[in-house]
Image 1 (cartoon, protein in one colour):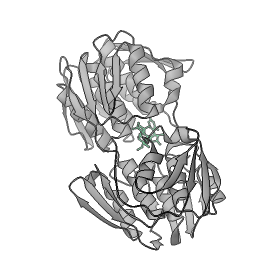
Image 2 (cartoon, protein in one colour; image 1 turned 90 degrees about the vertical axis):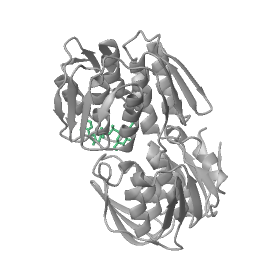
Image 3 (tube, protein in one colour; image 1 turned 90 degrees about the horizontal axis):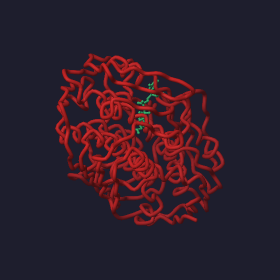
Image 4 (spheres, helix red, strand yellow; image 1 turned 180 degrees about the horizontal axis):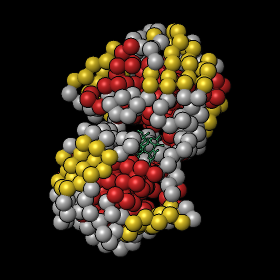
Length: 415
Ligand code: UD1
């Protein structure tokens, strides 16, 4: 699929199911190699990032099958510890294989990871923490080689609660004899989901979802089954689609406790939002109100991944809103694209000031995953036709976003 063609202005209605979270399933796939056994993952989203991670697992010697949304990983045959440059460059999250491979194979060799270009995305926190566990790390010509002859537990304090670094520490330390602790750990629900999976595999991890995590090393792990947590960013994207089209929709498979910051902002904008068990009902206002300053923060603060879709929704508001992007400095690549649709957005460094009105259809280009989804959200509410290229970015994190939106009445097709 190369492009989305969207005829804007159609109301959405009905229900749509939110699929499993990309940011949970990827570390879960890396964690599965620690079992040296068969694992089964339910509600696995068929995303390009998942397919790339499957390739990594296969090259390491695992057998991997994804049918419908059930992923089966058999890591009994794992024999390699290297990940090729070509696979590493595909996505940044592959860096979590560093901790998993060192733990399982005693060594790892991989190159600095790729992914969406969201500005400087260093891995210094990962490397500093892994060194504290006694892992020797050499960096040469863009490659990282890690060996684990003298691994030991440690009390690690993260200078910043990085999601990936927290996951890497857990994956590396889960079988180290003794107790490892992580303070100032990231609290994202996807980390908790990975830890739930590891605990089902026989790990002993406490405190996931809090800033202090305790990992008691166990001698070995075994296979397990797990259902992936719903994707809160997909839910946020669909909520923003309801906003730009002034619609009422119902989302299935959501966790209200994971959506607090997004719900709070959209309620300020005038949305009516209610939860009933794992369902959410959202009714957008006729006129979106502008909001106080939105600052992206680590969880449970406002997620950087939902910033672009919310920016798209604010383009339709009455009044002026301010966003401060504190996590990734290059999240504003969509501003020139939204401007092509008539948006009035001023950016100065990490601050964006959005003067709301309405948008009109245009030819725009997705340049990263969430930005691409946000352009789709904008196009749904715009007058006339939009053409969105760079859909392969969107496919990294949304399973057929066009189908999901068509199911609830959007006029969108891919060509
Ligand atoms: C994960 C998510 C991504 C999300 C991000 C923040 C996955 C697969 N991806 O990415 O969708 O946008 O969390 O919620 O789960 N940093 C350093 N040094 C490091 C590591 C990070 O300076 O060693 C900085 C980054 O540049 C960034 C901030 O910390 O400014 C957050 O990064 P991090 O939490 O590590 O995000 P990711 O794990 O890459």
